Length: 540
Image (cartoon, rainbow, N blue to C red; front, side, top):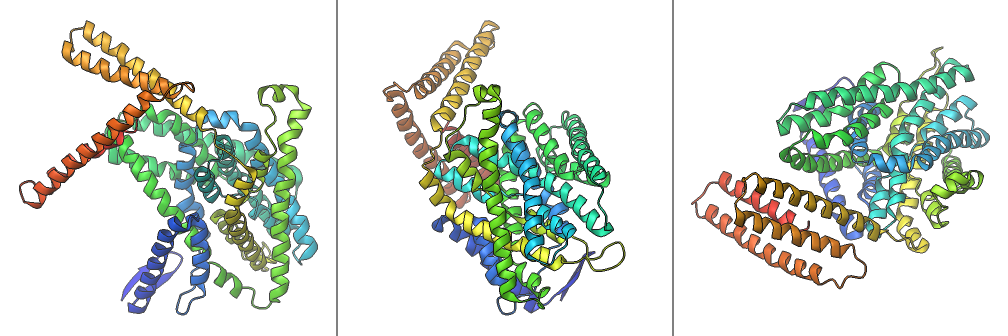
């Protein structure tokens, strides 16, 4: 028997528990495998699978500690999302992102509080706690579906940018509401000052941490160490911000955006190659853990509500879910068009989009693990030692909102995208990429001329390199030309096809030498890595 201890719980793992854990892991792997053929985003499938497994015979009750999400998992997820969010896109969409991440969060908090107070026995303070809990969105399922079905890039940028900021806004409002509920009083001016302090302080801590990390990483040339520091940067920003009483979420987001801008000047080729694979796998695993745990939460949540009528709970949950969805729809359309009607300058810089665009954003109100973690953060007792009124009910309604929005909105989103006839603006993105590649090739030719003038390049080498770069310029110039005949691109595709077959022949030969015992595994992997890099270069 293997004892596993932590500050929160002690688990004794015997044969039965080991088999239960194996069954959970096999089930999770099976759901992830099915997500591809079923064309369902894996977060939705994991939540549904966890929900069913949670009521299975012999499955232990698993309660998700909120600290596991907010301190253990959320910082690296927020950091990598902010890191890969372009500063240009944030600046271009600062108005819609702010209206969603601040205005809509505030409206959802107030609107859900009014509805919950009207239909349940929750007091005003507890109702505001519920409103803050269910206000932040989770973009993972939405962006996965949107990218697969070809939604305009700007809409994806807005949805992702909203989720970056609204976690911080919602958690700040939640903290204010909990203080009011626990203390039994509410001071509006104190709350407003606390909100401003949390936001400004979180951004300041994020900038400070980003600057320090940037200075620390500048002299380093150790890819594993640099990737490790990048992974820990989310914690380096979150923990001191939380200790200072300001928004840790905004600190992480700020540090991520800051490092995303400056990292290209700090890293080597090897560091960038290793970091891409690392972040892709870590992000996937953390999301799998989060959404799998969310699905397993319903059973312990229901156990806390054993004394309440089932149908009354369900009907109240349905009303609250409908309120959450309706409030987003009510907000998005005026927030899209009213600023343009009121301010001609906005209308000239950013003309009004077709109604289909705000309709897509309005239907992207899916909630995730942050909502469950926020609900579990609600304390058990008030300052007087009395139980926190309605805590179990708040947790149940939060789970209902997460489950309903993920399943209903998530599964219906592909149909909504097709009905709205949204199409990705691929031509603009391809044109931008082609322009960048042409400019890069021209810079390389300019540098080549300098090296030739310095006598550092042989004539035949210079001629061969010029031919490669000029072909690249011709290829990408033709790709960005809508009137081109596509002849150069077809030549390039044929070359790539032949080159792939030749590289695969090289790889088979190297593996054969390993199998015959003529070379070691280390030599095989080193050559295989070089061949893989050449294959990856064929698409550029």
